[in-house]
Amino acid sequence: MLADAHTILTKAGGKLSDISQIGTAVLVNQDWKVALESTDPFKVIEITTGYFATTGKVMIFIHTLAAAAKMYFSANSIEFTDNADPSEFVYVYSPHLNDVYPFREYIGPTALAAQFLYMLDPGIKALKFAAIAAAMVMSKADIAHIDILLPDYIFLRDRDALPAIGKKVAHLFEAEIKKQNDVRPH
Image (tube, rainbow, N blue to C red; front, side, top):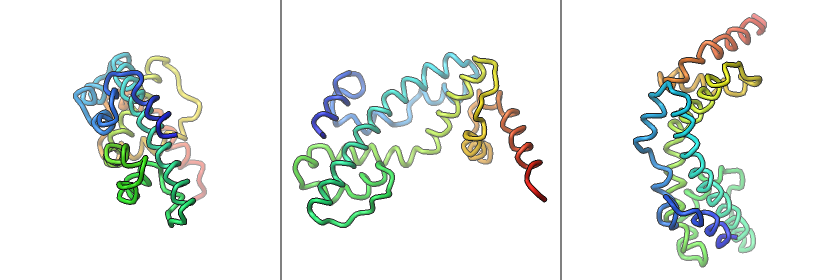
């Protein structure tokens, strides 16, 4: 499982041509600033698509490593928390895997990537929201399930962290909040 996931992770080259690059591939870079400050939907989509393509490959590897570790723990009667997010699981249980073959080949950089993804979660929410807002601006249409995106909108709005392009569609989310508040019994 791990060898196959490693091949998938690194076969495309670029930022992820080696397992040691898995942590730095998910880090904040100059493109984030452009994506969060730009009101050009094409630029935002271009940047966020590239970032999430890389992060997606990293997440697949983290999920695979977590699944393999859970199988190893189960087979060896080692207690673990099964309901943890894969990134959190890998980060928390990485010390248990440092000396176990084949995990020791992957765990160091993978645990670092998992930690970075956990720490960067608010910024990643902003990037995702920027991508969705850019798509909304490009299509010039409301989206059907705006209520699903509402928690991220409120999270970013309350921290004054909405991406610039997100401010262009904020009125749609505020209208949804108002609608939900009007429907609730007083």
